[in-house]
Amino acid sequence: MIEISDSLRSLFSAQLEERDGSYVVNIPASEIEHDALDADETYRIAILASESPTDGTNQQDQHQSTVQEAAPTSDGPPVDEGEVRDVTIETTGDQGDGIAKVERGYVVIVPDGQPGDEPTVEIEQVQENVAFASIVENDSQAL
Image (cartoon, rainbow, N blue to C red; front, side, top):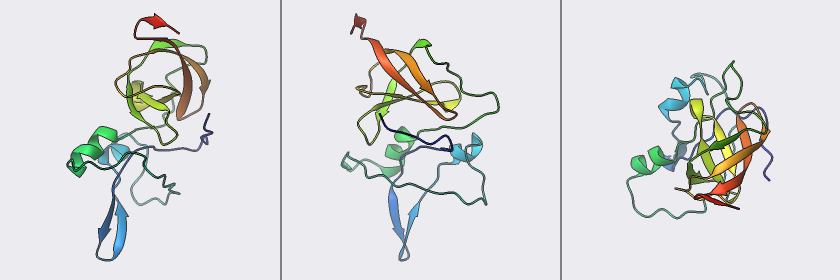
């Protein structure tokens, strides 16, 4: 399982663009709106290679469909260790794990989850900005 620091503020996919001899990654407005990031602040950015090839779709549409929000809140994570819940896998992370979002855009990483899957998962590890879960039931069939 991939280790993610408790200091993770935001997780999303974006296209690297060349502009006037420089390269730019656009930060989605939702990251500011959900208080994951603040304008005029400095952040450490990790760039991970995408395993999926671009297929010629509109970059804005592709970006919007893969935005992942992990906005921290003062209320703490919306999940608890040992909790069992239904999720929808929205995308796949760079390590091949399924990524689902629950309340407030909180990210739940589900190994072996594929986009479109709607498994029942058990939350195994909870961090401030992300949780790790295992599938306990997939497509109404117990594993």
